[in-house]
Image (tube, rainbow, N blue to C red):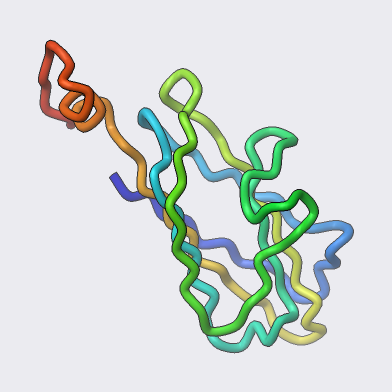
Length: 127
């Protein structure tokens, strides 16, 4: 399953007071993230992904994805507690004139895929 989230950050949103957006996911584990940073960000924006207070990307804690006109894709294995969770996306925009958007995607392993992968005793179709 692929989940997608558009995160629009108003101009003049400082790094020390970023916006926070919830990204709700359901499944067994996140297996990949992809972040699209469209042209125009010019290194004035940043984004980080959190589960609770723990920063899960980028690492080390305190860093931000800062880019322009780039697609960043990375493999991940992040088990989803109790088969659903809310990630917190924090983002800033130091551009004094324009709002900017990020596009985040998460590939999530569903239960049926997980059971097939581990050779589980039951197989069922996901809705």
